Image (cartoon, rainbow, N blue to C red; front, side, top):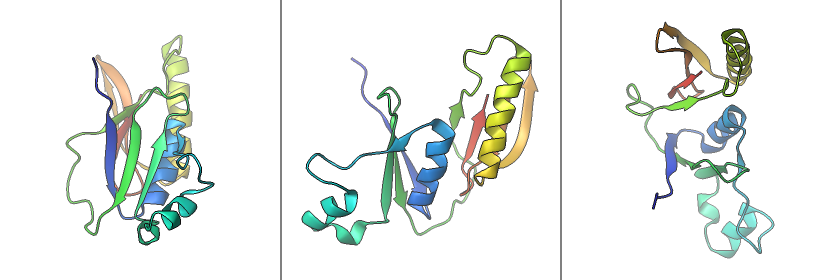
Length: 142
């Protein structure tokens, strides 16, 4: 039996980073628990109002991918990621031209949303674009 996984990301601005990754992955903000109209209402009822803005979460709207959890931390990112996400923007593309077009379009959307291109990889094993999100976390788009 496989175990469920969550990806946790440290952030200076959890909600801002969640907004970026929602665009990057096609995810949505996790809805509040049943019986609550908003996370603010849930926090108020449960004595957690002081934590608003300290965390955020995204889910795959189809329920297939892992939950992404963003938590505020006081320190800035200090070095290269040891784990990173690979976004398969070209999945299902028929040929190299179509794959390149899909990757290029997605990279352009992410750059417009605050990412920056770090480098391009073009090797016999594959091609991808390496980027950094608005807080400097590296990831790839292929």
